[in-house]
Amino acid sequence: MDTCAEAAYYTAVRMSKLPTTIGLRLWIAVRFVVFGMGGFLLMLACWVNFIERLTNKYEHSVWPLVLAPLTVMGAVLMLYGVGEWGRWIYLWVFLSLPLSMLLLFLPFYPHDKMSGALTPAAVGLVAYILARRHYSNRRLNPPARE
Image 1 (cartoon, rainbow, N blue to C red):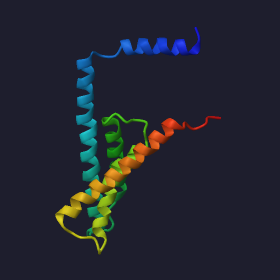
Image 2: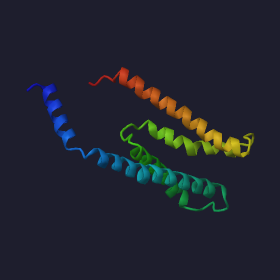
Image 3: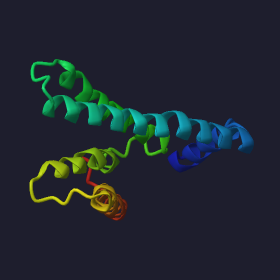
Image 4: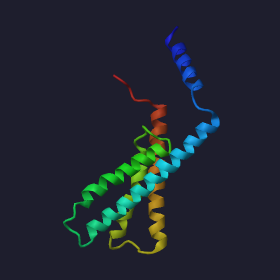
């Protein structure tokens, strides 16, 4: 057998061992709820506590050293939960949400509810568009392997 035929055969064997459609859909839903939403809550809770510890009277707290990596861990969990594992550029989309909250500390930034809600949404949308653009360009022009 040639290489293409072998790859097609092993793909067909692997596809035949996939769970039923209902089972696969159930797994995707559970994965999204547990890892996607759980990662989102972990990321935001840790980021809010991280910022609160840095700006509060607890200057000598060790918690920021723990909370910052947990924020990144929440983003990684979200990456798995939404089914984009291995597409690491999407981490910037997820991390752009808490990072855009740093704008609230700028003195000229408006402090109303609408701008507090629209800024992370706009930054996340721009990061998502850039990530999609990166992967579409990569699909059209794959990197040369040496």
